[in-house]
Length: 361
Image (tube, rainbow, N blue to C red):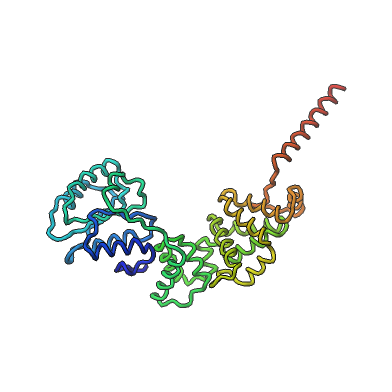
């Protein structure tokens, strides 16, 4: 794992990091601050680096982890009853771990915080912190990293590790599996290096659907229902993870790269084949479907879109699947409310006819 020793080595959250560095340089860093954000975005690392810079001499940084049992009396004696001549910084990890009573006690302690004592808190659940505590401190909000920032971090890390042979497929799997979290990116990269996994193996291991499979699924949208059902089944067998973000990501990149942007991510032959399959209007329909869909309705939405794009009626679709004995996720029989009502009316007519015949007898 990459060891960060200075604030300059961090990636992402540039405005926050710049502001912190500016305050440290001007010796005006606030006495009480809270660093909030998703797990793994660098809050604890920044808190440690800030505390080390605020501390004078070789005094180690004292860290309290509120995710574990807390002795509030010890906390008060260690932090709030001292009157240091030189600045001292303390890190409070997982501030949300304190219950309401403990937070109230901490609030009272903050009223007696010595001038030369700095308290730097971290939390992933800002909403659990009392508003009165939040109002006392400076809030630093750490956000997830964008793809470019993650890609730069990955390249720098691979260079530092002496790795120059990682495939594009493997890098894409690592970047997308990170979901904006640098710690997850580096953790998975260490795994990839240690196991010497291929791009395909890494994609399967991290639950990442390959670009080829995504491409095949979109092509199958313009084929008859049985071929489309097979493509959907193959997609669902890849892993149990939510596929919707990956489908949206691929189609968004395709729509953008249709305009021949620099550094395309989708191969030219694949873009050309999709352009031949989908008219601009149909391409927008696919996009609208993916925007509208949820993880629970994705397969249904894609099935309905497939029927629309191929002019396949519901009865025809069911007939196809019976003829070819197709069984799978996307082949559930979809009966509209109108058809179901008609079926019920037919059943009612049969019942009435049976009753009448019995009366005549």
